[in-house]
Length: 267
Image (cartoon, rainbow, N blue to C red; front, side, top):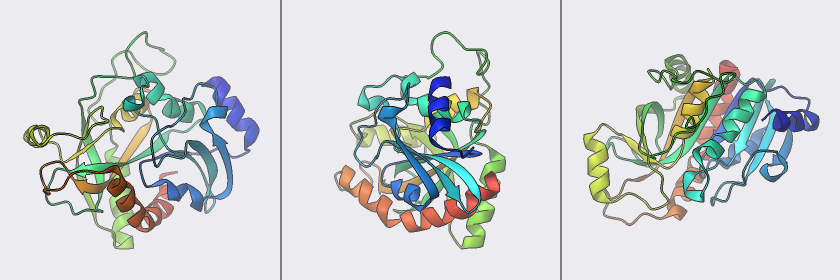
């Protein structure tokens, strides 16, 4: 990550104060940055290549107004065959760049029936059912402690700022618990019933690994899910990734409006 940060610094003079990871269908936000520098993941040491549909696979450095930000336009997933350490590599690059606050976004299935399709939901906590952890193996004490506390993985301070910003814009923000499963198959109706029983409001295939790595390194995390569909068994419809991308694009304007107003405050 030291080598990766050196390459990024050689390509851009910007020193971002905040990092953003864009989920499926939400990549258009990266196109709104001013003075943008785009670096494909394939050119950055230590980063895998993003193969998921709807993920461009590039690091974008630019500005929102006068605020420099770094955006991962596309992330890495366990279902692509990567290890949890590889999935978290982008977050560790953010930290090597000096970033202390990160916004993790994703497309998620709605378990809580109060969420409408297209709703934006702040993640208050997660349930990691991916059977993988980016901290497995020898601990690097330069990054964080061997046994990091996970009481508040998703910053309450950042959630308050997000709610205040959304209220000013007239955007409704829900809040809930995100369950992370490995994928790539969608969940069965029985699994969704199980997730509801254990307290999950949303389900997806990302985010938890990144949040754990960020928390380990002392970074503050804000998580935002876009509900792109009702989870399996709740709508009577079969799930398709094309629908996930379609809903993500449909709400991209509202999502971009929120991040454009919010990121300067977080930085």
